[in-house]
Image (cartoon, rainbow, N blue to C red):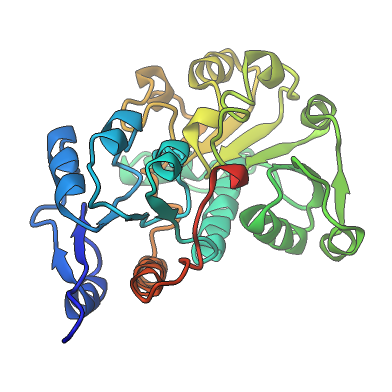
Length: 328
């Protein structure tokens, strides 16, 4: 007698090749429209499936998990970050949580460097001139930016992505500094040419560029708050391709408007799509729509990770990318 297929619900449209593979392996319900599920739809899905495949746009909190009932056994997140999932409550309810770490490292690091260059070299201003038909020709003092070589880069969060950023930035001639919850091993520091700062305040005050690459956890919420942002040099810039909640967005907007910080490159925002309207108006800010990991290769790799986690669970083993509260 063959084993019954797992019932899997996917909350957003995924690349076709991923959806096709999920349909081959499991009893899968795919999303027909590429819009986030409502809270009601999420709640119903969690009551009627064995495995939920959510994304960052799904807020899976204590109440939803507690009301899911006994059928749901695995939340196989499509993405590395799990701050939108109450992992502790899931564990209490006997629901495993997995994610997709590692596969987006290079894509996100690439975008981090792109934002640094865009801000430092004033690319949006140049593009606006060209698209507006306002360019009158080359001039010696027009749109003068700053070079990356020789600048001090302070990386906040030296995990996979932070280290990938360090390697790229070193190739541009930047000096690598970092602050992390735990100091790296000396051989890793040596390989990256990275200087460790135990004090985040002291590092922030001395850097030319700050790159936020840490996850959002209760301890990193507003880690770059108003007081710490004021420690930055007026000619410094800040780039964030991690989570918007790490920076106090309103404080950052005020300081950018006042010229107390030179510029910012942001791919993520504290309140999701609700971005401070004053931030949109600033010429010294580059805003992207959370596209740091948006490559077709990366999205397919994420799907493969999800499938491996579900298949391993279905075979009676621990998902290789299981997330537990102690990891957060």
